[in-house]
Image 1 (cartoon, chains in turn yellow, purple, brown, green):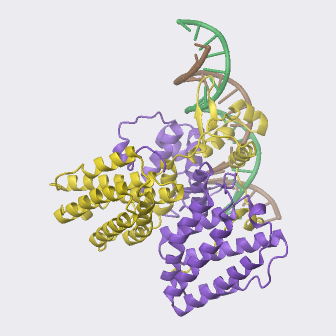
Image 2 (cartoon, rainbow over the protein chains, first blue to last red; image 1 turned 30 degrees about the horizontal axis):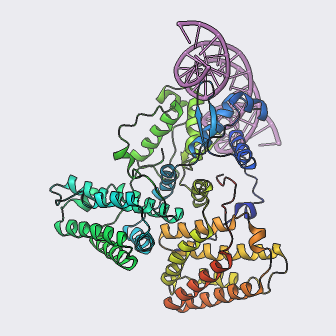
Image 3 (cartoon, rainbow over the protein chains, first blue to last red; image 1 turned 90 degrees about the horizontal axis):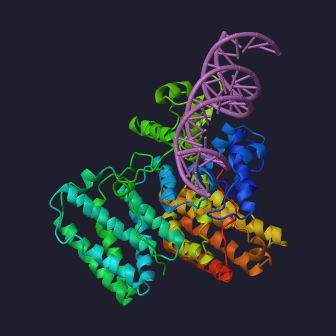
Amino acid sequence: MKKSTVQPINPKITDAPRALKRSRPVQVADQIKRWVVERDLRKGDKLPNEAAMIAQFGVSKGTVREAMRILEAQGLTVTKTGPGGGSSVGEVSKDRAMSLLGNYFYFKDLSLSDIYEMRKLLEPELVAKLAGNLDAETLSDLREMAHQHPEPAQTPEEEKQQHISSLVFHARLADAADNDLMGFVISFMARILSDLTVYRRLYATPNKELWARGRTHQIDLVEALEKGDSARARAIMLSHMEGAERMMNVQEMRITREFMAE
Amino acid sequence: MKKSTVQPINPKITDAPRALKRSRPVQVADQIKRWVVERDLRKGDKLPNEAAMIAQFGVSKGTVREAMRILEAQGLTVTKTGPGGGSSVGEVSKDRAMSLLGNYFYFKDLSLSDIYEMRKLLEPELVAKLAGNLDAETLSDLREMAHQHPEPAQTPEEEKQQHISSLVFHARLADAADNDLMGFVISFMARILSDLTVYRRLYATPNKELWARGRTHQIDLVEALEKGDSARARAIMLSHMEGAERMMNVQEMRITREFMAE
DNA sequence: TAAGATTTGTTCGTATGTATC
DNA sequence: GGATACATACGAACAAATCTT
């Protein structure tokens, strides 16, 4: 087990006496954030333009621009040129949130078993909840994906492609969750797995048995979901996770050595 | 259940034909990221200084500075002034990663039951794994926290403080996890809960029974962890989660209406 | 302590690009 | 197409922080 220090949970309470020197642009960015929160601005709402901010904060154009870059980089604002342009509030996209979080794990060397431990806990529960509650469109999407690869992969490239398809299948399920937090975590794991650089080692030898089992699992799962059979859906997913994990558990995995943030 | 479109999982594959106009600073920031990844630079490693980048990329000083702000905002670099200063690679802190992810959920209106659903799945498993595997220091920290509030809260303010202490207890457990992903998710949930703005409603009426139960749970849990009794640790945690959830399940929760990112 | 060197931080003026009307 | 309103980018100068001697 890991030794670690107690993490401050709520900066507003525990970080009180810190008085770090924050550069002017960061201060401005913070003020703008506060401004947005105070007025409870939402997705499309516009911020003052450059000139107004220069006047408002008493800083130069360059400083304001740096501040806006900070907010943009965090996905909080978008900026357009031209008349009627300027900056406006923009909700953080799921994709960007995953990229930003991916940067954190870039330095962490997650193991495959870490990820599969989480998947085994979350994904069976997810499908159990989904059973009987999916709309027709989602079900037909899933069914289509399940039947997408009627033949075992012939080449490593095909094998890789099939694996990614499988992860898309899981992400589609995650998107159907009404629990946004659970959906995000599951999607994030699918994305990490699909970003692996070790494809070649993991999927170098097309594996007929794995292909057959994965395909059967998906088809059976869709059926259980449609019929509203929670217990069966859960069991299928757990079995699928265990199988996939067993197949990979020898490999040491490393997160894609690539910053994922846009 | 929610309708939603299929999310592209791997931008490198699915986003191929996008050719968004990226501003100069963003392009520069991306190039620097690639540069870092290619050379596999790590935590302290230094980047070229402003002057060198200006020459390297053929852009102005302002552009380089905006690029550096982008990287800083994502937690990827740190910059210092003075001789021997400049920018260097800096691993994304857990705290910042939580803030950035918090920005995503700012717009999402997570419900309390969403969070407790996840907590019930993850935290019992966490303590089951931890049982018998904690070092003496962590155990003594936990024991101390468990005994920290010998008396029930007298005021709403005390109540709030006790609740936060309890969340610190959970975060401390999360930090002891050897699964970084699981640890992060659990810590993140603790942070969201401690950032709630609805404190007054949730903890307005000091609740003796809740206090007694929470305290007993913590003390019993530490004992089970020390003795290596996985099953008991799991059961205690599950019971604790269920109790806490039941107490709160009437309330509609909203994420702190405050951008959390630094 | 003080001076000097180095590197980022900030400002201002000007010019250019871009979208809307 | 032209005018307008905005962001984008450049370059030169000076300010501030921090290290070294």
